[in-house]
Image: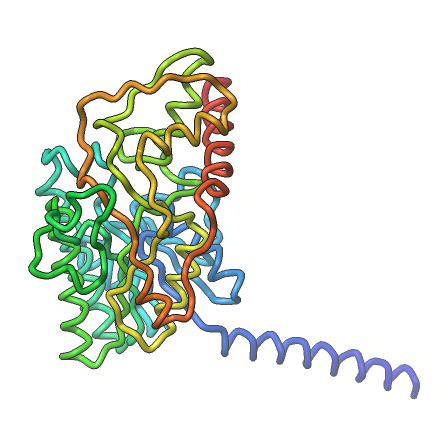
Length: 350
């Protein structure tokens, strides 16, 4: 009799565990991350998994610097409608559209890649957004860029104007910026016409570990870290432009925090997600040189440099989300330089 009782108690525990697992599977929310193989996308997937979501990622490739944590990762081209339909095969609770044809100044501001940048990114946005509409997906995040701001508002490196409502009359400094501005209007039109709840952020120069640091598509923080790591003590390194052009740079962890907060908010945007700690490019180079402990001279040479000044204006994000980035630039650059320096050493030791 006692043996039978123990048997049934054990069987009941197993059934309860299986019931709990099934209940957890049923209620678990699902997320789609487009561009999950990229720098920001990889960090976003990690954050969403930590929050308990089931995550599908899609990209042309896996992240080259870290293993994906996505539950399902699809290698595919979001320019192809058939691929997008196969990926958006259910009603996801959240969709993050980060996929784009992009790069640093050497890729975006030479003019050599303008047609590809506009064609590829526009196709991705048109495909993803309409597929979401047809699945009745409401919450879609779109990553726009500070490159949409008018060039004439960014001529003074000491006093750029990047407040959100300064975007019009429109006059971006690159075709990349024009495509981003078109996409913003596309997502807002879907909100108005189809009852969607898309959210738009204008990213300001996101950087950090596991990002591109060589090959021509790297951005200024990674490029400078690589150059400093490659330059011997007592040597010299090149910096494009006169080095007086200003920017602000946001560490990727705070970008992810702002991204998820915005998507889950009642404000559709557009909203700046960036740091207000503005710095001249030569000063950024000096910061990294100091972190390296080396004595390196800076050579300012002609090269693509974009607008003269750009800085995030965070008044609206503080008002709408009751939050704004606060991490000092130095702290993020310290981590980024250490990671790139180690990656470069591993590459040379292969």
